[in-house]
Image (cartoon, rainbow, N blue to C red; front, top):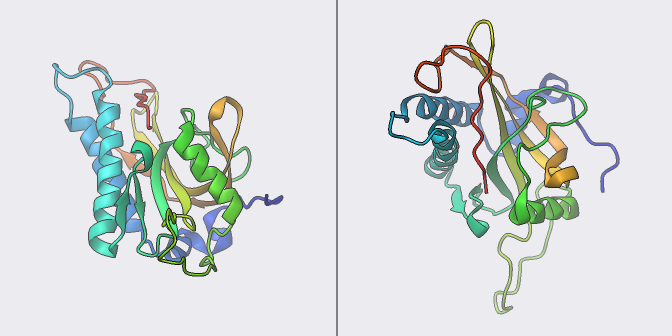
Length: 229
């Protein structure tokens, strides 16, 4: 375990663009994902949809757009361990999933943000692997597996990051702000929620004009929960 967990504003550690570049990423891919998911939340509901449809559309679009962008632009590959969708770099050393965070998402310092829902078995295993590898920005050093060996885990050297997002609609102005960070979880804490990270790349908040999630609703704090397996 690492005793001193890094949680500093992006500008104090090279800036978010530099940090993303260390992972082979660019902000434009994540920004596009977040804008598309907000659009899906706002336009993907009719009077016949379930009440949690906006949140569900938001989640599914985050998964789809992030994977589509990195797959088509950077040759990353989708990976779905036990229905927990990831997108993985060609070397299979970095995987990224999406996750809802609490109000601390995108804010530097302690406490770290908590996942909105319990991690589940698949995410718990990913966090345990992160603890073992502890290599957030370095290329893992390992011997190539013997191709003749059976049951070799092709993803055994993969650290798993999550794109955490938190959506807030201001009570007075109605402006929607989406805060986000790309972070490497290190602990599953109380209630099975992820609550500590080895590294956090804090990303710029994105503001949107207010649009009610349900017909007739024009103001107030609102955030539809959707379980992310």
